[in-house]
Image (tube, helix red, strand yellow):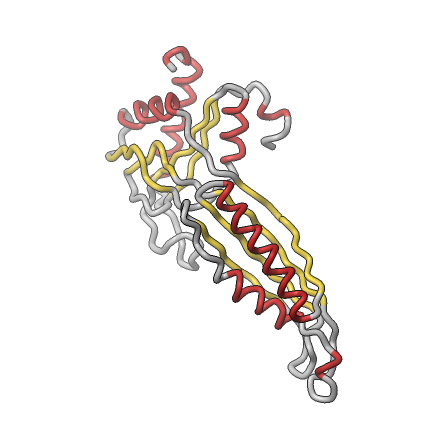
Amino acid sequence: MAKGPIITGVDYFLAMHLGINVPSGAVVVNPIGFLATTKFDMTFSGRPAHAGIEPNAGANALACACTAISQMLAIPSHRDGMTRINIGNLISEGGRNVIPASARLCGETRGETQALDAYMMEAVQRISQAAGVMHGVDVKLTIQGEAPDCDNSPDLVARLRQQAEQLPGINDVVEQRPFGASEDATWMVRAVQAQGGQGVYFIMGSDLPEGHHKSGFDIDEAVLGSAVALIAAMVESLTTDPSDN
């Protein structure tokens, strides 16, 4: 979408996230620290064999995946900023007495900047190739998605702050707070900014019974009205008096 015609001619882009450890009634108008990220799949193709009669005839794809995982999780942190890696899924099917012929994992890297994320992915590629050589297994790395870091447009942040301060239901307007995660909408923010427009990504607080990506996650639905009201106020402000920027 960021590369397509839907962005052409767009002057303002607004995006929002609920929660992110911000309480109900609060709005963060200028979150910082969006992490660049790369999502990847890794497939391992080995050779099956009977684990008792001739294990030497096999090439253990699952063992290769485990070697790669242990080394990827040990990638050194970078001196220039925050880096992250996570392996969220590993699948290998077969019997307990069969050398696994295939395995597949899903992972992601993150970095405080795109350069730091690239540092992580370079290490991932190097480790996957080395693990394949060690175990005699073919390893294929596939990039499934990416997102960059971004900076909000200051003038749009100022207008968002002004509108948030006037709305009932919002009792705390926070200027900055680390986002600490990655977001696809950063592509849109950057695309609009690249053509001379303005973009902002903000956080609408929501009390959570349990954190993001956990089984008990839920939102405080009472904040939805305030969120819609804030977006509507921004749209009205920008379409009736955009010259203030």
